[in-house]
Length: 344
Ligand code: PBG
Image 1 (cartoon, rainbow, N blue to C red):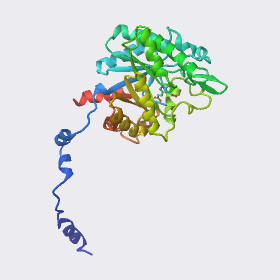
Image 2 (image 1 turned 60 degrees about the vertical axis):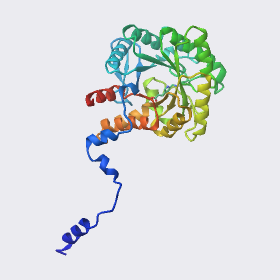
Image 3 (image 1 turned 135 degrees about the vertical axis):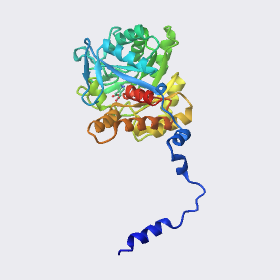
Image 4 (image 1 turned 90 degrees about the vertical axis):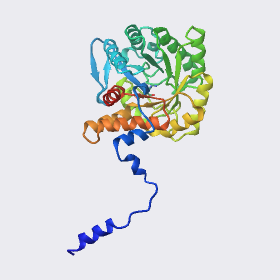
């Protein structure tokens, strides 16, 4: 028994494997790991989604998204400034609409003075060089919380598209750079492209939420825009079934044919295979949305001390790059940009 430790050491020291190839050589030092690194996340890859709410000089935390706040228009401008200073190319705007302003048709979406339009004008006035992306869908504005018009429990497609076209024009008129339809109605990209072109907005880009899945990961977002409690039923008749992959390619193909300049896959982490297929198949500018529930998982676990939040954030973001994404919509945008800056 006394010999046991010695015998064990002898066995371990004994034969070395006759390996020509040892992959660990390239991982041995930090400089070598940096040298062979295949993917890099830069601030150019980030789009920062923000929530706008009525009022003045107020920032209200979103309970299910630790670190994310709803901002009044003046504060949105301050965060746009922060984005510009961090060299983040683009921000995305989502409104929390007062319940009193919501109706069955989502008519506040067409108000040229709604929170999104006010924000676009205020941001563009002070920071004309930052990209501003506006979501096109009716859910922040409807009393039933759906992205389209509802009749007898059904979401009407073509009637909804007619309203979305008007919403897109309203946002373009306010100065929005990128129209991002997230509604998943059939034919909306072509209809919006035609309307933009016919109304002097030929330069306005379209990023289509092309492969958007019906997902449980949107929960915290619906808290943030106040549609969680109002939503009746679910969105499965227009958003995609999470089991499907070929169907995502059909969605993306159609949106490209209808005139999308950029396409998006959403959510992100559970759909990295879709990102890869889309990028390989179409070679389009391809984006991915790391949605509210993904943010909440990482930020929530980190807040509890269960994971290293900063490392998990950076790992998840470079994972999108590895999967083929050209850019990422993420609530981590400012933190990631600060981390990238600190390391460079
Ligand atoms: C609206 C929209 C949603 C998100 C972006 N645009 C929610 C939904 O479709 O229910 C989700 C974003 C997120 O969860 O971060 N159509």
